[in-house]
Image 1: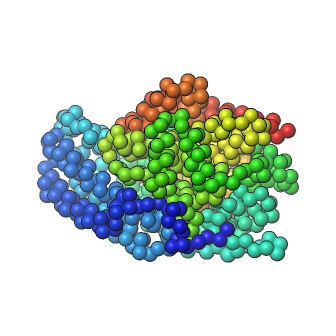
Image 2: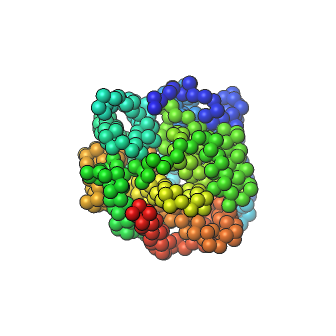
Image 3: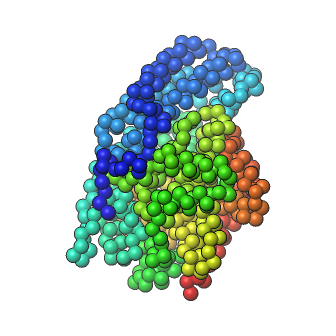
Amino acid sequence: MDMTMRKDVPEELTWDLSLIYASEEDMLRDAERMKTMAKTIEDSYKGKLDTPEKINACLDEFRELYTIMELAGEYCELAVSVDYYDTYNQDRNDRIDRLITNLMSRLSFIRTEICAQDEAVLGKALEMASANKGYLADIIREKPHQLSAETERVLAALDQSKNVPYQVYNMAKLADMKFPPFKVGDREYPLGYSLFEDDYEYEKDTDVRRAAFSSFSSKLRDYENVTATAYNAQVQNEKAEASVRGFESVIDYLLFPQKVSADMYHRQIDLIMEKLAPHMRRYARLLQKIHHLDQMTFADLKIAVDPEYDPKVTIEESKQYIEKGLSILGEDYVDMVKEAYRDRWIDFARNQGKSTGGFCASPYGKNSYILLSWNERMADVFTLAHELGHAGHFKACNSAQSVFDTDVSIYFVEAPSTMNELLMAHYLLKTSDDRRFRRWVLSCMIGNTYYHNFVTHLLEAAYQREVYRIVDEGGSVNAQTLNRIMKETLQKFWGDAVEIDDDAALTWMRQPHYYMGLYSYTYSAGLTVATQVCRRIETEGQCAVEDWKKVLSAGSTKDPAQLAALAGIDITTEKPLLDTIEYIGELISEIEALTD
């Protein structure tokens, strides 16, 4: 279980960034090209964006530059994400980030000048536009919150500085935290961030699992003040910009680009906290019963219903599972899966300094890049299917839409990924009639897919909402406050079914989503849509699949409610969420029945 250094990882377990640029020199040439293109745009259009024709001509050139910026930025950032110990890649990433920030500041006149035009000019520009239509529509929508040209230029120039809290968080978490080994009996166990979250949280030996949690939490506590300071800086920055732009609250400001209402946001949190909690308490008590635990603690919540039945899965075996599980989405989709494995889109490696969890980056015009740490668990298969859901989504919309129309609302962005997890589970259920196998698959759905999205991230969202309420009232947060809010949130959800101690209160330190706006709640929002669409596919077959493919291709040309409607789901009401919560309860009831 020892973690290797990145330089010692076999190449076949790593992703291939040469699919973006064949060499660093090629990327640096694009960096120089960005400077030239930005100067040309500035010289040609600054102070002159007063006609529909000039507006669209400028955006045509900016669109090309924006694509190159994305490629160079992703190339450098992806290299950092797999090894936070590599100072060369960090320096290179900072240099490119500074360059992009500087160029975007200089080009901020594009939005301010377009926004300053009267409605007739904007309307005509929108009417003439094709690839620029979404960008122009967003500018018109943002007009009430637009500031002066100089203010917008200064704010754009500060973009890199605004990322400092997240950088501090990552450096503390992935570079500075060194976890000592812990002992259980006479045996010593190694410990690291990924080792804990990918292994020990699922460890069936209660003594080892709880000792790992205690040791892990002890190290987190050493960094709680610096992490809280970074987070407070983040939320204060957001509050300042929300106020400057005329939003009533930080939440309103952060929801604005998502194109959803505050009611949809609050509904997601409130209904799950109220309606799902009783079902999950039943699940916690079931785990306690199965494993003969004296008490159910926070450290016990991710153990498997049947750990003896959880098969080891090799990377090659995962390929077979995923190809078959996602085959319902069509031959083209399966071809993408095969390409992802063959051409090294996926970074499977487990090494020191690597980002935890999983993500998928999809630079426009290129393949996707998927990060995870492979542990030979079926949970990894679901994680990989999830990230391939993002890859399939952006392959479809990047192929069909302008780069300006691929910025899908984060409210919806987790729907294609969680859909793949459900399709995998439904495929597995059809492969065997064995009762124990069925219980195992259902428990994977609850313990992985629904727990991760409807519990872990939703509780983060409930906690995050309380933080923003404090900030909106003019307050600030520190480690003590954040520990209290997280502990109270966990206690409210789990009631007397789970003991929530001071170690559990540190959970707020473990997720990067708080530096990405209101992201955490969107996991449950996306899975709500995915659950309902998956049930449509089960009952209606190919027509539902075709509707889903239209959604994947639509990109950001539609808002979340429109995307869901295209898939046959009405998320403007609470019904899809209530139906999904009821479905989760039914799955837990069936697991209980199969356990007796």
